[in-house]
Image: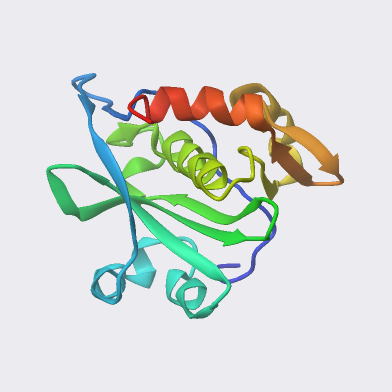
Length: 174
């Protein structure tokens, strides 16, 4: 169902240095920026699997958009995170419709957004610790692609080492 949440359900398609065009192989510098009220007007519910307008209304959550540095109005992906006081919790991650499936335009969007959550964790003094609920079928995938570990049940986490690996890949200047 569209508005129900049952854990992070996104494949980490490829860990890139930013995002990579699937046709040309070119890499593009990206920025992760807070979602604004103006952005929300352009984020149409029909183009996304999750209800990002509903996420926006939850005061505990912060929404961020991934954009190509020279194309700030085209949202490549979205993430919803929450500061839990000792780590960052990832509620939702989603690639834009044109970055999904076999004909996706860019790879690296999900990895970029997870790396951003790791970066925020370090900035907050949480040593890179993040957590998220995973779909059961993707637990092994997140272990392999992100270096995540199971905390309990479907709750997964990334520790300092796994977070640093992602940050160095996506945010080498930090």
